[in-house]
Length: 432
Image (cartoon, rainbow, N blue to C red):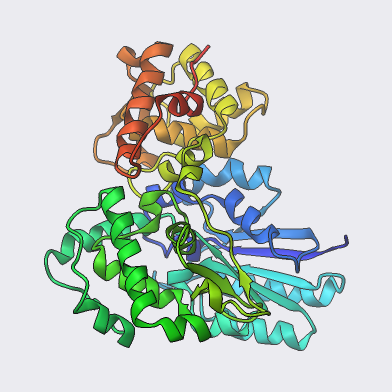
């Protein structure tokens, strides 16, 4: 495989502008983005990676170790405009892309990690040079023109998606916010009663009821063309106010539907050039790929628990159990006192001789912060501006692990019918 790929990260776009929160920067995982990008078959070996941002911003200090470990070159961009809403990284990224297209002819694939519509023109120009362009961004924050001109697009999870949906639910009250627009769902809205709880069993039963109604009412559609999952998602969100698939452990809505379809006449299928849709199994014709059913029991695993805990709010992105044990043991033997987040991450990684990554260390320390295991001064300030001290009453292995298991179980109970203490102990092992 040849080194023919460049990845250019528009960090300001990933953080949704200049006024991003420290929590947003903390949740953003470039490692996960790189992993998602590498799944596309169009890539060769990565020759260049550059990330554009004002890296002098103290809120970005938490990302410093991760970009170094991933081999990403940080490109410093200062915003000199008085209009802080303008994205200063755009121009530099575009200039570098065109420059690379000329001076590095071996580079054939340009991955632009941004949803900014301004990059549509860049993609078209790169096409004129015979290059392949792959976009990568949050699905709800991607310009449709940019998406259309890319040769492929990689969707990545939005670190704030869960919080956005929770806020929308709280602010909407009893008022329906653009409840249904698709004609299929206008009729559904007059026939299906909304569920009044987000209890996992009740939500699953209501989603199943919605799919059963589709099967009875639109049988011919489900046999011939299928119903696009965007239609199905609108219907389920009407029937289950506040619904979000991540709440139930599924990072994507399509996975939730694959689970609901298990044991029913329905399935999810797609062709190479079309969106996934809901079909009757008997209507899946040659040329369509039937996606496998998923089992709810798949979530009853350490990885299933880890996925649920990493979505929504509060967010716990626990690393591999061995890394977690190593990091927690070090912190207990060297209790942090009056340290800022960036210094604690870098110091821990260095003292452990890079046995663990900055990403794992950052996520562990943030989990401790969310679990309220630090004294944080000054109170109310962004975590990037706080000094952290491990609470003295938590400086024992048993108390620290017990507290983390407690908060993890509390969140899992809201998403699963049954939570296994044994799996939680595997996820958060005893500290030795």
